[in-house]
Amino acid sequence: MKNILAGWLVPFAVLGAATAVQAQTVTSQISGSFPNFSWPEWDQAQSGQMSINTDPSSPGSIYGCWTGMLLNQYPGYAQSGPWFATWNMTVPSAGLYMLEMEYAMDASSLRPGDVSVNGALQASNALGAATGGWCASNLAWSPLGAVSLNAGSNAIRWQRASGLYTPHFHGIRLSKMEPPVLSKSLNPASAPLGSGTATSRLTLTLANPGNAAGGYVGPLTTTAALVDTLPAGMTVASTPNVASTCVGSVTATSGASTVTLASGATLPAAIGCTIALDVQIDTSVAQVLTNTLPAGALATNGGANVAAGSATFTVVAPVPTVGQLALSLLSLGLGALAVLGLKRARAQ
Image (cartoon, rainbow, N blue to C red; front, side, top):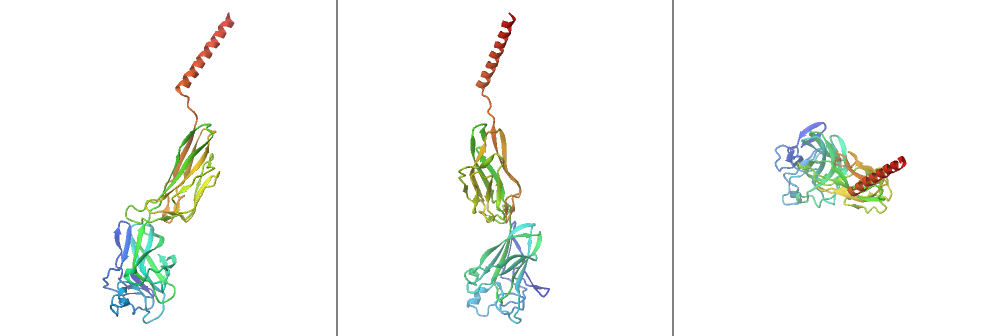
């Protein structure tokens, strides 16, 4: 970790180098060994700096449980901010990553701040929730949302806009995210021509695969409404019988040509969710109806589906049976014989 003060890079090796814990998760935490740091004690920090608490002045007191955490508790000499810390995190590949920070904070003094990634604001008033206290035993991880990172080094900065005090930091984690996978089916998938209004069960499967390589495995959140437009000849049934395992609002109105999952819906971790409903199909015309959701239709904080999802329903013209064919041939044969007999009778 490095702390930036007045344009200078000040060595501040409290978090050490980022360590690849799993294939696509990068975590950096205070290790307990600090050979180089700017201000070893919590009451010695200069303007704009935060310090690591390594040598509490009153062992056994409340300050003793702060050991090993990054904080600004007392401004020391120059009482001015802003107080901030910058982590230089290296990730193996570009893409979306879930950003999390580990910290401790008591409800008696909430100290939120702003988080930026490579100079762009990511979250305002972040880390504003209490974790139960200031000690190492109160440390908790807080997700700050998906961030777009470059392959290689990325600067993650936490900064408090005002106030002298900060949360007690201990770690930062970046986990590679994978986009959802979309598929759909119709059951039954066919009906005979002229059989009236057919009913089929349409099922949309919104899979949340997580990251098999060891990255982010949490829930995904839709960032835009998912709208499934049914093909001509297919509508939502008069009694839709909607069943959904997605955490969010589903709209499927009787007779409508669209089914909608609202923005902000949640796809649970690892398994995702399904939406099922009944649709009606016009069987007065022999046809193949294809219901498709294109690539990019399912937009989430972990990306959008790469491949389209499709299902087809076929209105099938009836095929004559063997008996019907035989009867038709017999009818043709008898008809031919009758015509031949009539011709002979006229000839006589």
